[in-house]
Amino acid sequence: PSFLAFFRWFMPVGGPGRKIPQSIRDKRAAKDDTYGPLKTMQEYLAEFGSHITDLSFFQGAAAATAVDISVFATVYSFYTLPIVKKVIADANLSEWWGRMENIMPESISKDDFV
Image: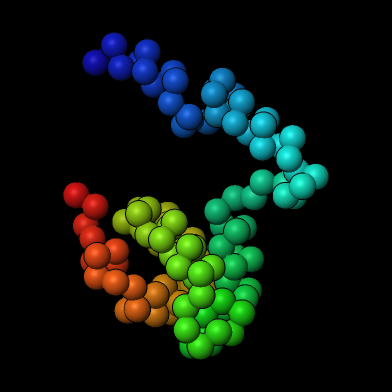
């Protein structure tokens, strides 16, 4: 319905140039000196993947660390999207993802988000 277009204007989603998303990007760019430039999800996962070794977790740990859990939980809700599955595979994190699914509590990894 056309009345939803009004609300869509306020949502922080959309391509470059939309007012609110651009405002969010501009505010984040002001902190580049502190945090470094904003990266894409692919870049963040590739960097994370460089710290995963065979049959291990973040930085070679034998068990999942807070970083592993944080990355998994953040990406998990989007994992049904094909592009997210592709990014996980491209970052060579498929085996890590499987290990995380096996160790996470059922209330998280088995949730259908319905």
